[in-house]
Structure formats: structure tokens, C-alpha cells
Image 1: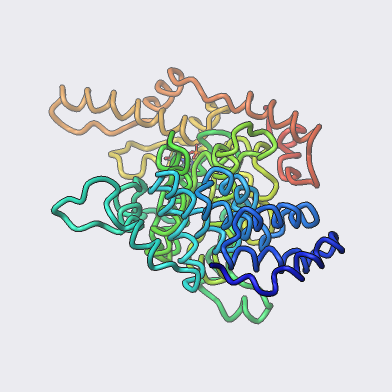
Image 2: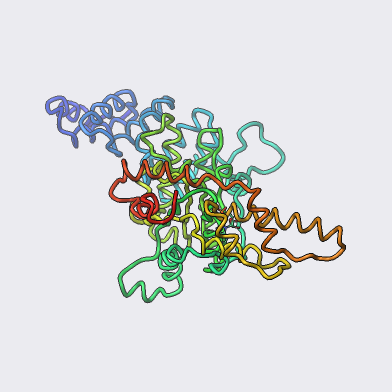
Amino acid sequence: MLDDAGLQPLREAARLSPDNLPLRQHLAGQLLAKGYLAEAEAEYRAALLLSPQNPDITAGLAEAFVRQSAYGPALAALEPLLAVPGYPPRLGVLAARALLGEGDAARAAYRYHEAVSRDPSVGDADLAARLAAPPVQPSATPAQPYAAAAQDDQISAEVERSATSFDDVAGMEAVKEALRVKLLLPVQQPELFAAFGKRAGGGVLLYGPPGAGKTHLARAAAGELGASFVNVGLADILDMYIGSSERNLRATFELARRHRPCVLFFDEVDALAARRSDMRQAHNRQLVNQFLAELDGVDQHANEGVLVLAATNAPWYIDVAFRRPGRFDQLVFVPPPDASARAAILRILCRDKPLAEMDFDAVARITEQFVGADLKGVVDRAVEAKLHQSISAGRAIPLTTADLLTAAQAVRPSSVREWMATARNYVMHANDSGAWDELLPWIKGGKGKW
Ligand code: ADP
């Protein structure tokens, strides 16, 4: 028999003052502790009406559900709280129990390990053992703890050592300077930063037309800093299975943290960080929330030595939550190159090739709408033609200005003009708190014809 001494007066008191939240919560807790699960559930539901989204009450309700094997309702109760970055870890453990009850061992393990990594005291040895056990028939090989498998098998982003530095990036002096201050100085001169009470951290969002050199710049920043470089594309993260994308994202951050100092670069970040209000699917919102949580880190040291850079052609689609301090708190426009920058890019692209006397300025003049990627196309094309000539001649024939001019005629530049037209729309009509001010001189015609 359950010992229910003392419950009756509590029930009575709650009936007399139904709006007394602490009292109802206490009663619910007692009911749960004593195993009156259905009654506890009803009490928690009533308490939740008085204090919606209260994590303690939600936890109690979810536990009452789980212990009644009502796993779906438990998850439904927990979901709104789990979507908030930094949610209480014990809620993650409860979600893990519910997910395991539903037979979703993979997501259960993910939730469990995520929660315990933030607060080991919420660990549950029994649950951990069930999660580590093979999901089907026991096999001859010992069970692998799920977290380890998730990290090593599922992640496709790789750690590179960058061979380039800012010397390999032509022009963009203002952009390089901004990155130096943001990324490099805090690491190179920590005392100076400390003296001004500033902490290293926070990411940089590089935006601009496609092909203008955002990826090149990020890689060069890693080289400049002597840091590892992890280049994350959409295919490394997005996965059709619910929960897998979040897991990939988490594992990618973990990879970067294991290789600090590290530049962690997200290309096409607008697809991972889109405005939640634009999303119809709850699980896409989950991914955004997970991304925010990873950027914030479990504590202030979590992302120390990890410099997060991201690139997008469509910064206006990104949820404003990403622009808060400590996240992508600096927006840097990577502009299309002007004539002197184009000449400098061509010089860099050609520097390890056999060259005649070159007039890069002449090529820059006829490539007005070209961005770095287009110029690379020009050089690649000219080199290929030269290679054919050299093979026929049996000796290396140096590249000439004329070769580049000919190749430039054949290459169609990317659509920077269209990009500028879209940008103009956003800047003129939705320049929220001046976020895109850096673009103004470009779209108002002060910086060339677009
Ligand atoms: P984005 O990431 O903006 O789409 P990329 O970084 O992929 O553009 O640029 C494409 C290529 O153009 C690079 O691999 C690089 O060779 C060249 N490039 C672009 N900008 C520059 C630059 N400022 N200096 C030297 N090369 C550049």
C-alpha cells in the first residue's frame, strides 16, 4: 500500500485555494512521489495553466506521463521547452526516457548525452545502460556507446590546415582589417583586449555576391592565425531524418572544439540559420535553435579558440537572433572587386605560372562585372589553352596578357548585377536597424555601376 499520510490535508488545501501555485505544485510533487500518477498528471496540468512553460511543472508533468508510458504526450509537453537553447538538462533526460519508450533509441541517446554533457548530475545510470545496449538482438561485439558513434561515423566535415594567408587575398583591406581585429588580435594580443575589458569571441557573418571570395577569405583567416580550418557545407549538416541534422551540427562544433584553435566556417549559412518565422516545419526550427545553442556554448569557455565564420549571399533571410552579441555579432560585406582589386586578384591567380610581361590592369579594365570566381575561370581557361600549345610545342610557352584578354571574352561573369538588385530591394525596404548600411554606397552607385 502506498503511504499517503499527509496527502489528504494537502488535497483539501489545494481545493480551497486553487490559484495557490506553490501549494498545487507541492501537492503534485507529493502525488508523483507516492505513485498517484493520474492524479499527479491532473494536478500538474492545472498548475501549468497557472504558470505556462514553467520548467519545473513541465518536468513533473512529463515524468507523470513517462511513468504511465504516455511517451507521446510527454514529448509534446517537453517540446516547447527543448526548443529554447540552454534548456534545463534534466528535461533532456526526461525526453530521452520518452524517446526510448517510443523506440527511438538514436534520438534518445542524443538527448541524453547532450543533457549529461551539460550537467553530469542529471545522469541516470540505468537509462545510460539501456541506451548503450544494442537496439535489437545482442550481438557478439560489445555495444558501442551511442555518443562516440555519432561523433565519428556521422560527421563528414573535415579538418584542414590552410596553406593560404591574407597575402593570398587581393584587395579587401577593410574586410581584412575587420577580421584582424575581430579574430586575430584577441588571440595574438590577449593582454591588450583584456585591458579594455573585451573578451575574444563571437562570430563574423560574411555576406556578398557569390564568388566574391568569402570562402577564400575564411580559409586565409585560418592560415593567418595558424588555426585549423573546418569548412562546413550544407551537405555536411542537412539530413532527411528528423534529429540527424542537429546531431551533425553538434558533432561539427565538437570537431572544431577538439582542434582548437580552429576557424569553423559555415558556407550558405542562410539555409541553416533561416528566420524561424519563415519555417513551416518544427524540426527546421529545432535546427536553428540547436545552432544558436552551439554558438552560445554551454559556458563561456565552450567556444574558446573556435572562431566561427559564416558566409551567405542572402543575409536578409537569417534569423535576427543570430546577430546578437556573442553570435554573428559582426556583419562584414565582401564586395565585388574594383579594377585595382581585379588586377591584384589576377596577379595572385597567375603567380605560380610561367608568365611573359603582363599587363593585369588591361585585363582588369575589360572585366568590369567579374568577381574573383569569374577571374579564376578566366585564368583557368587561358592556362588550359596554353597547356595545349605547350604540349604541341614540347616546351612551356609562358602566359601572355593577350591570352587572358581572349579568355576573358569567352567567360560570362556571374550575376553580381542581379545580386545587387536584390540587395537594393532589401536595403531600401527592410534595412532593419541599419544592418546593411555597409551596402549603401554600392547600391546607390557610389562604387561602380551595378
Ligand atoms: P564565395 O565563397 O564568395 O562564393 P570563393 O571564395 O569561392 O567565393 O571565390 C572563388 C575563387 O575566387 C577563390 O577560390 C579564389 O581563387 C578567387 N578569389 C576570390 N576573391 C579573391 C581575392 N580577393 N583574392 C584572390 N583570389 C580571390
